[in-house]
Image (cartoon, rainbow, N blue to C red; front, side, top):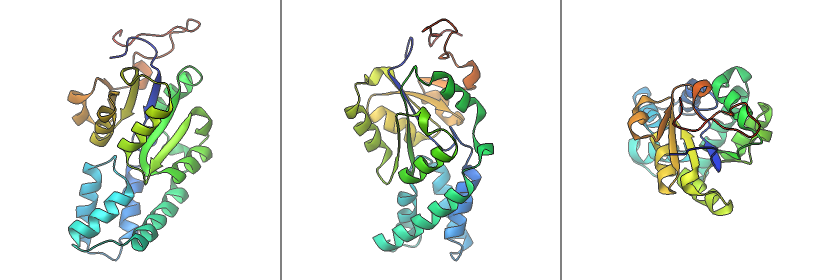
Length: 225
């Protein structure tokens, strides 16, 4: 538990900063449009249960688990690039931003170092954050194909943040696991299944007790409602 300003905050992207679930689903349906519908539904079920895992992992899982055949690197990259093109075309829409999260990030900008750490493609994330006017708010914007646990571990090694004073904000069990693997605090958001395993659960960023207090340099401490 943090009792005042953290050393840093790490944010997942999908479901925390942008409401992208339906677009991600459509992307998988599009790149697998020639596959049996029941197979695509199995992929979507796996995708929903593993929100923090990358498309690279999920595409490979589809071939190895559903089709029971290997997924070569060339095929994997071709499908991932098709998916990326769909995301870039549809997700640079300010209407998809989650207002409470963005207001929270803007309120803390310049006071707490913030990073995006996501299972989405890293190059795609940086492009989208630029188009959405968010890029300047973050110290770094990190994504796949590097696994999220490794991204967090590397980030923590490159910055002087104390793990116990650094929080990861996410909406998936994989976000929780990545935080725990590096000893970070975890704050769940947008997924009730995370409430019991979160150090704190964010129901509403506007009332979450880690907002600048209004005093110069002051903070509302975690634990104070």
